[in-house]
Length: 316
Image (cartoon, rainbow, N blue to C red; front, top):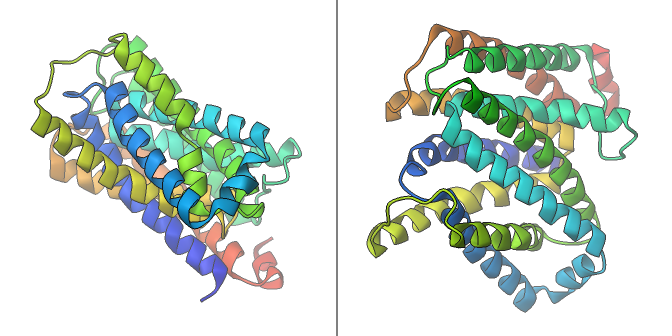
C-alpha cells in the first residue's frame, strides 16, 4: 500500500480516538485531579514504551539520546500541549475546545513555512488555502461565542472562557511544533514507540510535583475507581498518540494538521450521545462554518498528499 495512504489512515485513526478523549475526559476531570491523572497515565505509558524500546531496539534510544536539544524541546512542548489540552477541555465545551485547537494546527504549520522552517508547508492549492481561511474565521467566531457565553458549556464567567480559549490555542500551536520536532527524530531512525515514550518524562515530573502540592485537589477516590479511571485513560491516550506518531513518519505536518481538523464531526455526535453539554445556535453555527472549512482543506490536502505532483498542481 502507498506510504502516504497508510499515513492518512493512521491520521484518521488518531482523530477518531482523540475525539472520544475530548468528550470523555471533560466529564472525567470533574471528579479526578487532572495532574494526578496525567502523572499516572503518562508515567505508566512512558515507562512501558521506553522499556520496550530498550529491550527490543536499543539503537533507537541511542539515536535519540545523541540529540539532547531536540529531546528537551519535545518534552517542553509536550508539557505545554498536554497541560493546555487538559485544562481547556475542563473549562469550555469539548467540541469548541477541539475545534479551536485543531483549527490552529494547519495555520501554525503555514506560519512555520513562512518563517523558513523546513517541516512547515505552504498551501498546496487554492482549495486548501480557502479552507484554511475559513478555519481562521470559524476559530474567531467560536472564540467570540465562548467569551460571550453563547456556547453550551463554560465552567465559569468570561475570564474562565478566555482562559479556556487561550489553552485551546496553546494546545494547537504547541502540538504542531511538537510534530515538527518528532518528525526530525523519526528521520533520524527513532521509531514511533520510542518517540512516544521519550516525549513525556518532563511532563510526568511536572504534573507529579503539582499533584503533590495539592493544586486542583478533588475529593479522594477509592482504589477501584482510581484504577478504572487510569485503565480508561491509558486506553484513550496511548492508541491515538501512537497512531499520530505512525502518521508523522509517513505524511507531512500540514496534512496531519488538516486531517485533525475533522475531529469536531466525531465530537459533535459523541456529545449528543453523552448528553453532558447543552447546545446553542452559536455553537452549531460555528461548527457548521468549521465543518465546511475542514472538508475543503482536508480534501485538498489529502489529494495533494496521495496524488502525483503534476496532478496535484492542477488546482493551482
